[in-house]
Figure 1 (tube, one colour):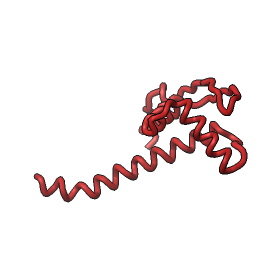
Figure 2: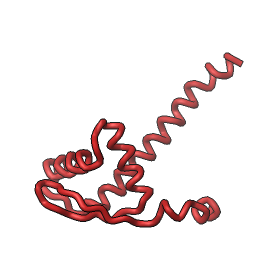
Figure 3: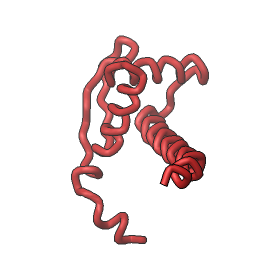
Figure 4: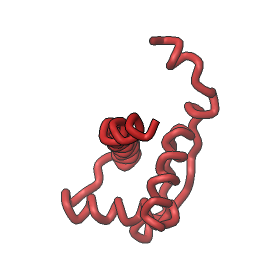
Length: 105
């Protein structure tokens, strides 16, 4: 099990700080590259730039909760949710498609 985690590319867990403007305020967010990559992917699925996606997410959280306590943590958790749902969708597709694929052989 540790082999799986220990042998991941170092680039994935190197962190990067990015500066952006949210709600008219300049801020910096420091995340690991793996999270930045996932956020870029999520934004692309929404046909948004990363900046637009982050602003939209921030605004929606603000509307829902009245404040955004730890945006970087929210982003990490959002990435985990996205990956978990993506994995679940793939598993469901494989389960549904298996009889069809088996019949085609």
